Amino acid sequence: MSVHVAILGATGYTGAELIRLISRHPHLSIRRLGAHSQAGKAAGEVLPGLSGDLAAMPLLPADKSLSGDIDMVFTALPHGAAAACVKAALDAGKKVVDLSADFRHQDKDVYAEAYGQPHPHPELLSQAVFGLTEYARDKLKGASLVANPGCYPTATLLPLLPLLKANVVDADNIIVDAKSGASGAGRSAKTDLLYCEANENVRAYGLPRHRHTWEMEEWACTFSGQKAKIRFVPHILPMTRGMLATLHLKGDNVAAWHGILSDQYASEPFVHVLPEGKLPQTSGVCGSNCCHIGISVTGSDEAVVISCLDNLLKGAAGQAVQNTNVMYGWEETLSLDTIACWP
Ligand SMILES: NC(=O)c1ccc[n+]([C@@H]2O[C@H](COP(=O)([O-])OP(=O)(O)OC[C@H]3O[C@@H](n4cnc5c(N)ncnc54)[C@H](OP(=O)(O)O)[C@@H]3O)[C@@H](O)[C@H]2O)c1
Image (cartoon, rainbow, N blue to C red; front, side, top):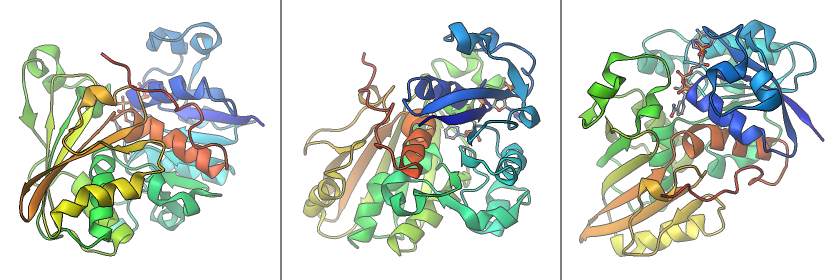
């Protein structure tokens, strides 16, 4: 079986990662590459890693990327721009996995508050499945629209949800201190990401309330049944990819937390709880679809739980392919079974 795929936003960082993963997938076949300012060029002119047929593929404007024999579409576009492409793809009968934030909220008012603009297609929100794969498998099977989670929400929810579900965490008192590599900000030119300004520099951003905070709180509550108050501070680091989230948590029975997390993820192919005493690092996950989780008990009623993932893989394109594998009922690890690229 070959599912014919269009990747819209193929010239961006997550789009390029989708090309890398899908080009080695046994059941997915890349038939269209969509772009915006780079449309009209050949893919190989814009993406240095491509060769052969992929390099020669033309970059098409989004509206020319959906015609003909396409079965499914990955939209790796800025939020706001993605929604119209998603609607066009759904109207044309295609399945969609959207990597933007446009369909991650169940309520249009929450989207408007988080993103400072009205939702372009609120009528589609109810059919979107929030694709935090480990918690959404039943709904993903047969879904036509998957909202791929954000990278920070994935890094936060994977360690947090088992503890919230076990009712051992003080849900009003959650601090998430997170760091990301610069690819998290995308490929478009920004002055503060110039080499001279990003190199040898660390800074917080997105305060007082980064837009991913709404996504974390909404899905923490939906998946665990507990209303969580999250204080989230993201930082950008002078490295290309990788994300580390440190969750400062208070609660009960902290000695049991490592066991709760280990039991939850014991049979998961991509979420690994490290042995007690071992803490995760970004170099252990970059280039892979894995999330590593470690825990350090820091007091009788508190612990730090640390998670690491590659923002472009488990935080974006990798999870998108994982979700696609579940949607179609394939082996969940197809094209994702690589270990980290280290050193
Ligand atoms: N980067 C991450 O780590 C990450 C993680 C999770 C989720 N995401 C989300 O994934 C989406 C893509 O992120 P990215 O980092 O890959 O972005 P990016 O590197 O900036 O790439 C954006 C892509 O969208 C195209 N584009 C820009 N404006 C457009 C418009 N108005 N209409 C149609 N296409 C347009 C660009 O085409 P041209 O190059 O031809 O202009 C490019 O292919 C975003 O919504 C982002 O929030 C990113």
